[in-house]
Length: 561
Image (tube, rainbow, N blue to C red; front, side, top):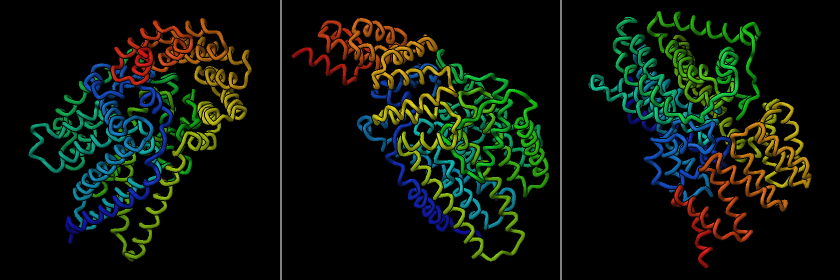
């Protein structure tokens, strides 16, 4: 006899309570990494009136030009969080929003998994298998990489959208002709492009579980391809002209991905080396042993898929394998700045939780194992997972804790060494910061941001010649960037070279007109030098761009006194 919905609701309530307890130590974790240029330094999210404009201009979504990809829903959510939290002093509302959506996703995941399992082999125990798979996913330490990383709620929205669309399709067949099940998918595309894999997942469901031939499944899923495909193309074309997703050879990046996918698969079982920024470098030859191993692994998974789809009761495992591979595909094909990133596990692990937990269920169904043993193993697995997630929350607490962990897990990552050094520089530990920056330069000798930080720390240590050399090197490496000129201008002013400072700051604003930090810095220079007219003009111009900007209003009010 299948458990009643009341029992399931009660059990899911316990799961929610356990997930909340597991993540109770993360709600005040700080902003990290891409959060800074997407949230902290992005002046557009500070005004609710900008919400409609996010859907027109990708440049407003991110303050860093190379990262200006079209994700308007993410900017909208950050704007609302900023308003609810009355600024950026506390990250609470940002984490509350992400976590609320996470709990909603777990509910959708349970519904989808239950339907998949029952379609393969009706059994009252399937309800508990689906709940365990959902719990394993919800408590898995790898999920903490996304739940803690605020800007990567885009992965969550994308996964939520796919699960929502599939749940509507499965539970409300009358809505299939109207296409309403595509509504959450369409919305999800405005959060992150990997949502576009939905039609492929829908096709696979139809082929595996609706007794349809390959051609019939293709025809039934064709409308979803016709809707999602063009919209995905539109979203891609809406990226800002300044957007630059990757820094590697496309060929080297793509041949590296099978090995990356293999490491992702392994992390489902052994998530011991999770890192916010791995140090994996792209491989350069198809004959590299890692490339060969990765390709063989992918071929093995494909072979397993076709073997498992032959029998209906093993098709959920095949479906899980397909889900894992197809959700890895977007970040495996499009060259990105990181060859590997653990927050990318969020979407694919739905498939692994589905397939592997069903494989375990089939094994248990065929054996008489005492319930106490099963219950004990379940508690042990979930407790271990929850403990691992809480440990990752601790790692994500501050920049110092996060980047120290990266230096330990990914010691050849120059950016990780630099970011840990940056946390030390903020704490005033300049010699330690300089050491880490210098070590990072070994791995990233052409990294303009690292050169800027070397300029800042050498300036703090009163090594003027070294500071200026590094600032100029940063500008040389990234002549179109506004950052180097802004920090160089600030250093010039601090060293009494006012006219040069003004020229450098003006050049920074010219390079990126909405670079608010450069505008603030130049206002300070005008304020300290007593140039009231230029200060008034700059503050007024800044308010024309950002009508709610507090510092500009404060300067204008001060000028009236």
